[in-house]
Every structure is written in C-alpha cells, then in structure tokens.
Length: 223
Image (tube, rainbow, N blue to C red; front, side, top):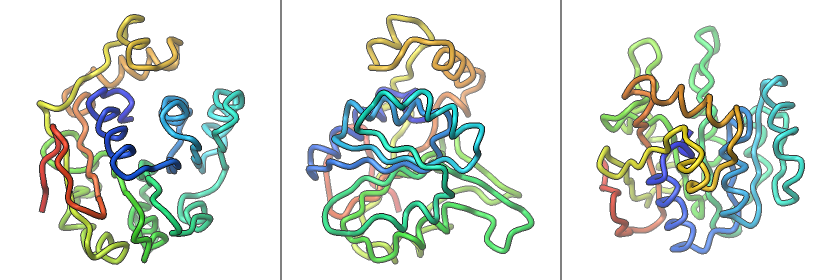
C-alpha cells in the first residue's frame, strides 16, 4: 500500500528515471489501486493476485487501462514470466504466510524466482526498518532474514529504506486524493481511512534494492 504515501510514490518515480525503467511488476494486486496509480507512471504494469475475489475486483477496476495486465496466479509462478534483459521494477507486496507450508514466507519464494536477475530493481513493502512492518510468529521482515536471498538475485545490490520524515501520507479527502494521482472513490477512501487507524499502518517500511549506489533525498542506506 505504498500508494498511501506520496513520499514513496516520489521515490519510485525517481528510481524509474535514474534507471530508465519502463515496466512495473507487482505481486499482491489486492483490489488494484497501486497498479492503477502506476499505470500513469510506467509504460507497462504487470500485476498478479492469487485470491480470486480480489483478482476479479482488480480486473474490474483495471480493465480500462490498456497498459495494465492482471493475472490470477501465485507470485512465484508469475515472476517466472520475466527475463533479465533490461531494468525492471519488481514491487513485492504479496506477503502471504502459510504456517503449515514448508516455506511459510512467500517473499522468499519470490526472491528465489528472481535469482540471477542482475537488472532487477526490487522494492519490498512492509519491511522492518522501524516503521510499520509484517511480523509472523516473532519473525519480522528484516534485512537479516532475507539478505542471502537478495544477494542471490544480485550480489552487488545496494540497500536503501525510507524513514518517517520522508513519508507524506495521503489523507482521505478529495483534494489530497486527487493531488496524489488517485481515483476518488469509496475503495480508495476506505483504504486510506484504514491506513490512518494506527501509526503502524500509516507509516510503512519500504526496502529498495538497487543495482548501483544512488543519492535520493529521503532514502538512507541500510545494512
């Protein structure tokens, strides 16, 4: 849900421009608001949603955008469609967790699917950098937990995160929503209201994994 934060949207656009990225590839569509926003920011948006209920809701929302493709697939299979010919931005936000599965964290399966993609630019939502993040059975989504998988994607990755000062949270008001480039509708308003119910939901951590060193205001190096 980085679309609730104009600071995050701005960082994604700056990274797009620095690397000349044309394709935005998202896992965890949910109801399609993030994909809809980035349909204006990228030439092509690919997004996947495993849960049929949310897939159909996203499809309905996104059908009018000719540069957006929504797929009803799990993220591991979805990511296998992409090669490593040039820079692409992979936005990982599926975060499914199955306590009964051998591999409980879907983000690890996603990173395994991207192994060797040296031109990948990876953005991971709900990352533990001191802001709101996911935590399953006492394990948070931190760099120590996923670093070895990231380095198998690209051993030369440079890691950056946002911070609370760089966050610019969209308020659930028409003026704010329109200024952020979002559609003013019930779904957007409800999501924004939900995001403002607690600081953990309002200010969300993001990890940016980049194939070269950059200097972007509001991002700090992370190790």
